[in-house]
Length: 188
Image (cartoon, rainbow, N blue to C red; front, side, top):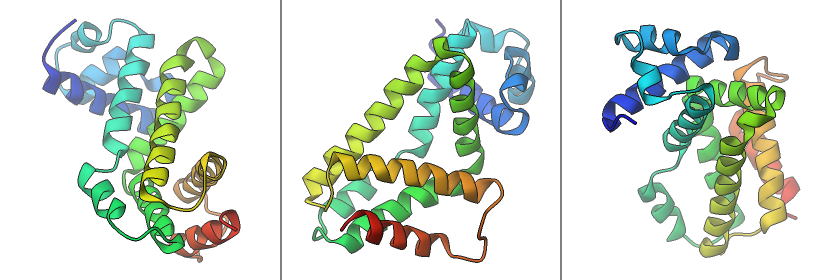
């Protein structure tokens, strides 16, 4: 495997762009080479198969959508309240909607693994790690809600973000207001 991490990341970023723009069928090694402006065959040197490519894209998406350690530390030092939890959820939704191409690529990959279960392991592992990380952060910060509530928030956030990035049901309602209503409804 090639060792140039910066180039690997650039190729994964190009793959994310292709995936968001063209969908799963447009995601090829050649399309990524063209998007990245590299010689043909470069992407296949870094990601030998579609399975390796999917795993690399899932990993890169996770990195690009993760909160910074500084963001987590700032929230962890605040008093644990429902408002802090709502702020944390709003931050997640903001990251997902601000990085539109990355999130659209994530949704495309989820659809791809639904059609091709053999590609699912890296996605499943990333989703479980994300959920475990959110539960651990919530517990460490003393925020309300346990694993069940955090899982429900994952479901709700996925639906909200999908709605906002595609064809919103109610574009006139502020996303922050929706998050506040979700928090009020899910954290009794």
